[in-house]
Length: 501
Image (tube, rainbow, N blue to C red):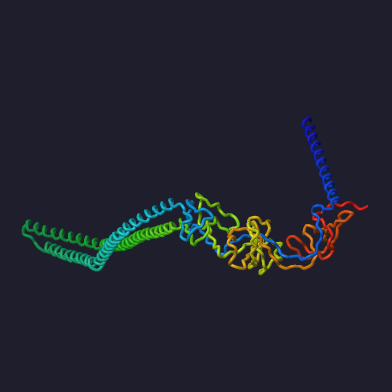
């Protein structure tokens, strides 16, 4: 509660002070008006209507610029710092060093690239020697694999055409011989048995001897039968197993030798391609290192800026509307960043920003008078030579800022006062035409109300509104076509009006 009470007390005091200040202001104003009326002088901000010649045009601000400017910037795409820069407004000679950038990191980079380049050159020499050895080794492996194929093919053809048929004939002859031997043993056995049966022996010994001969013939026959069957079995085994398996083995050996030849060819080709690819990569790296090395070496001359002509040094880019860097030693530098401009003082122009509302009051070819702000006694004639087709915002990043037309003014003569230099601020008075013998008032005297144009005229009964019709205007005055007469007094503001009784 105590706190609220204190707040109300403070608010009350402030309101009383405000009322006292307002009363004092009204009292002082009335006193000043009364004193002015008694002295016969017009109160402040009242204008007496005149008739005369009204010069139409507009006064614009501009800056002198060189038609040709030499802009110096580091062209190397290399981040560095500025270590030396000539003072601004210094007169320099053609070829004189005006700025220098730090090159320590660049030199280290060049040294590193040189080492990398030289190392890859050595790697290339080693890889090319390895390629020669690899080619020789591959040729030997392919030659060996081809020899194995030829040997396997010869072995197969030899057995298939020579050894196989020969073994077949041998088997057939063996069976035939065994069969003949068997038949002969059978005949001998039969003959011995017949003789034994048909012979009468005188003694037992002779009979036993004959019987022994018969048994021997029987045994020989049995052996020939066994041999014959054995030869038949051998021929059967040869035909069913030995000969086909031998052909299959030789054929498989030939196929395997051919597959091995293909594997060797693929392997050698792949190893050769791999080595050639490695060499190509090394050559590419060498080429890239060489290119980077040459490029970085080309940056070195760019680290020194020299004056291309005689002239005066200006920091930054005068044509850049916003964002010129602060040029000083130690600043970070980047490519294409203009730090010095040397204007050609022999060919000067004036850059003017024509406000959008004044666009109709200036056209190409209009005569102008140029007056430097610093030397108002100098007046130089010129003319408008170019007005941009489209307006741009005065502040590029603010879309709500006023729009202007970039305008170019040229001097009528190349021989102008030497005190007029690039960068100088000037007032450019554009004269479009002159309205002779017209009534005009300051622009501040005309107001818009309810879609009509009015002025406040001073009368004995106080301010009185009058409708007016206006004509053309310049920066300060507007033509009054109807509604006012010469000698009337108008207010340059909206005055307080009392109600008439």
